[in-house]
Image 1 (cartoon, one colour):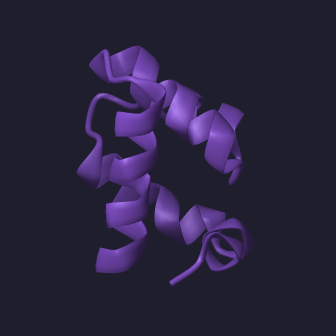
Image 2 (cartoon, helix red, strand yellow; image 1 turned 135 degrees about the vertical axis):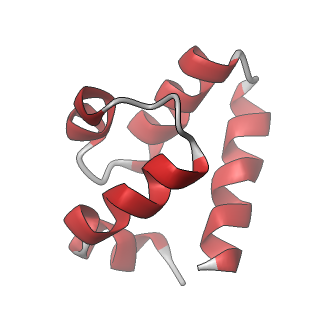
Length: 65
């Protein structure tokens, strides 16, 4: 799966993303609105990850879905 598919189906993937990163709020996901960099930034904020760690987690999420 690639990020374009997630952007195009953001509402469907919000649930999967929130399931993976449970500390992300609906507001966080509404702000990200399909933007990968915004999502990675929210993961960094909520989980205290580095930019690289957040990027790797999102990459892994893409591989698994």
